[in-house]
Image: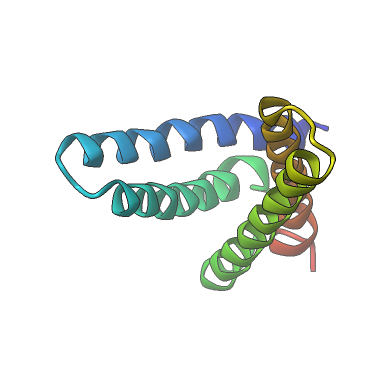
Length: 123
């Protein structure tokens, strides 16, 4: 439970960093799509190092291999997020805002489980 709370705290910090980059680049006139990509790219990298140092610090891993596993895990979590959003909003016709919350929760839970049992799994 402690690691899930730390993971969520790192997620909040990561979101601030990612959106900070996105908004700063957009303000500087960079294309919104490129700003978005760069914000998420650096946000994922930042998140990996924070989770490595804080959330899962007791589980020592090879950083290069761990980063690859983390990017793969977050990609899977994002695809699950999209599937939950599509199912809840388009198929079940649940309110779009509530659907976004459900999708976000699925991303967080999947990301945590993949991080805990795949990226930083004790080997």
